[in-house]
Structure formats: C-alpha cells, structure tokens
View 1 (tube, rainbow, N blue to C red):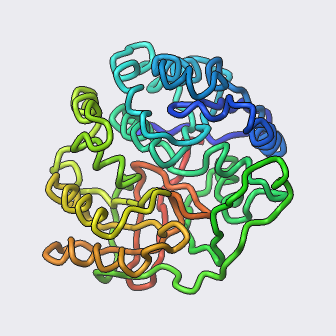
View 2 (tube, rainbow, N blue to C red):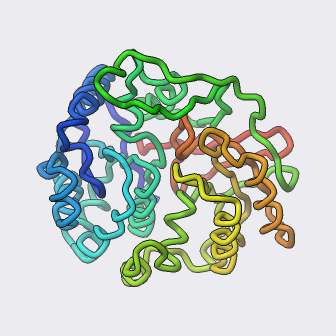
Length: 357
C-alpha cells in the first residue's frame, strides 16, 4: 500500500461532503464552527472545499460537485489530509467521476494524503484501496470533531492524535466507556455531555483461538450489501461493478475483515440476510474478522447469535464488540496494513507504521 505522511503542526486539512450536504445547512453551522475549531486546536488548518457547504439539495443533485472537491483536495499539494463531513448512502455516485479520472488517480498515487471517514464513506475507502492508498476508517467532522461536549470524547481524540505521530505499533484497545447517541444536536446542546455507560463486555471472542495476522479491510456491512445487490439504490450495483472496487473471493485470503452495522441498527433478521450475502460473495474466506460494537448495544446478544449462525461452517476466528464504526466512541482502523489479532488475549495490534514518515 502507498502510505501518506503523518501530519505536522500547520498542515492543511480539507473538509469534503461526499454524500449528504448536511454541512452547508444553516441549522448545523454551530457544528461546522466547532469542528473547525477542534482541528485548529490540534495545530492544523482546516479548509472547506469549494462545494462542501453547498447544502443538501445541491449536492444531492450534483455528485460531480462532491467528486471534484475530493479530486481538488488531492491535486492541491498544500493539503495533507482529507476528512469527510459525515456519511450518506449516495456516496457511491462519486465513483465514476473519480475512478475514470486519470488526473485524480495520478494525484492519489504521487501525492498520498490521509483520508478519514466512516459509514457510507466505506465506498470511497474501497475506491482508494483499489488505487493502492492506505486510508483510515474513523472519525468524521460532524460526528466527532464537532462533539457538542466541552471537548472531543477522550478515546476518539486519542486515536485522532495518531495522525500527528508515526508509532511503530498501534494497539486498538477497548474503550472503558460507551455513550448514548444524542437526541438534541441543536445550539442549545453545546457544552452538554452525552449519557455515559461503563463498558462491561470488552472485546469478546465468538469463534477461534490463537493469533492471526493479515491486512485490514472492511467497513459498513450495509454498504457492502448495497454494492453487491443494489439494495436501496438500484444503480449502485452496476456503478460499483464498473468501478471495479470490490475484491474477488481470492483477494480476501490474506485479509482481516473489520465489519460493523450502521446507526439504522438493522434487525437480527436483516443482519443475517446481509451476512449470508457477504458470505456468498466470498468475503468470509478471510483470515479473521473483527466486529464493531453495536450502536447503543442494541441487539447486542442477538447480533452475536447471527454471526455464530452464519459462520457455523466456516473456520474463521471472530472478535466482537470492537470500538470502531457507528458506536461511540470510535477509533481509527487503517486499511491494508499488517495487523495481528490475538484471540486468546483479545488484543488487536497494527504491527507496521501507519505512515511513510
């Protein structure tokens, strides 16, 4: 994989809206300002790309605007990282504008940058993976940097700060606490804390023993399911197939998958249907799986049963309840880097540097 450089104080960070144009709406201005302020407090210089603030209606109608912002962020040599505003299930629409653009592809390979986001941004991560760039499944501007409390959530902040260092090894640890989602994101909620819960489960082994090494690859389960079946958006399957971003069954052989469910919290029956499709497509020929914590622990035990049912005839170890994805707080998970999962000791260690320098 091509690795970006770590960030240093004074580096510019681009903000892009690759799907829903939420960031440009007046009712969320306070979160935009807060997110930008937090980046500045990290010593970075946030830059909203040209169309990032165009709003929901405009960006929904113009996927090419979303794509050109990402392209320009990679062409601009003064920008060293790109962070998404939030997710949104039509981000797949950017693929044709980017994968067929030689100038963009060349910029990605010649001037690699940190790219971070989660949820439906999975689609863009898969695109970058195909282009050979290591990216990071992790915090976004609205959901994390713009946390309405007096500061970012400590666990999330700890992992965001990894972008400013280049540790030889990074361990993904279980958070000591988890948080409820907010019911109120308005201006009046600034300075208020989320409801906090003590983590009582930690990482759980659903299958397997011993240690497994492999390259990290994954994202949001619903995004993979949509890409494979056209669920929710009929044109998604064709667009994804033409872009060629999904792996073949053989390509999963050296992978450790990281997979998580969205904030829509699919029912156990829905999760089962989706996982069987992923299995049919050959994803579970990987070396191991780590599963994200269910949001607010909804269906916590039921999801475990689904995973065990779907993988009953598969010889693949599974570690459950890991703090990435939609559940809060969240860490960063790097694509394509060598990682060791110890199913006996319930540990996850990235065993190579995250950055080129």
